[in-house]
Image 1 (cartoon, rainbow, N blue to C red):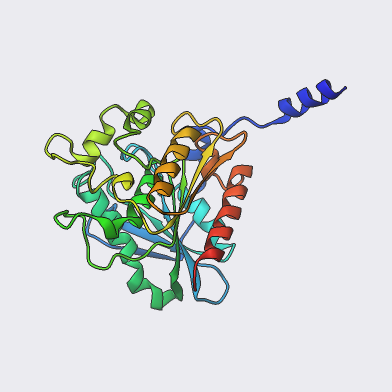
Image 2 (image 1 turned 90 degrees about the vertical axis):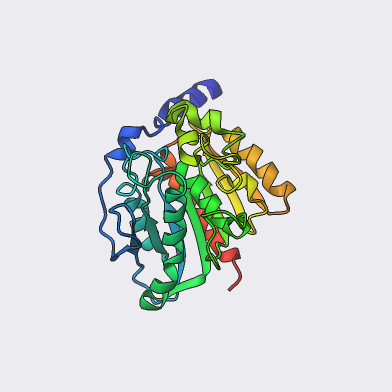
Length: 291
């Protein structure tokens, strides 16, 4: 009897979400749209809760292998709308991706930096709490979220450096890559062997990872949570574990969370059990930030 019940429970588990499930999500409308640069992709959308501010902020960074053939920005609008309904102000960031003019190094990184720092101008208009900022990124966006938290450690000669980067209190990386050099081959399997090389311009730079890889910017000075689905073929759970060990060795607090019955895209669809678990992590990390 026990075996039969166990088999029945296993068969009842839903299949992990597919790329098609992710891509066909409905686009949600934002409360405000801000262009932080002249290019079409240099834009962010602000989703606001109905409650009175000041609102804690979630910086949301979509994935898509850094490639313009994937959308991402439209798909994360569903997550942004869901989080706004839970009391968060969500800054849904778009950036130039490989295949667009100016993307790669330094453009993609400069876009993310400019978009995040643009929150300073938006905060007084919309009642945003700049002391409570958590970055949430998926896949390539997970890398960019980790990178953004470490901007204060950028080399002084880097064109990515900006004065007084906005502080990020915690990063929740959803199947993201924290070590571009050490884990580039893993990421390259689904995204293309030359994607990382194109992103950081390995052909023309002697130290292409020094200012682009979160692993080179440790300690980030932010709490780090690496979240992975058990069945994720893009960034398997061991990649998050390995990066967490690096983060801890550098003196930052970090955890890795593995979600059962989830793959790469379950983490970014707001109707999945995986997303509900991620929201619980976000609630915990936001409450832990000093006010």
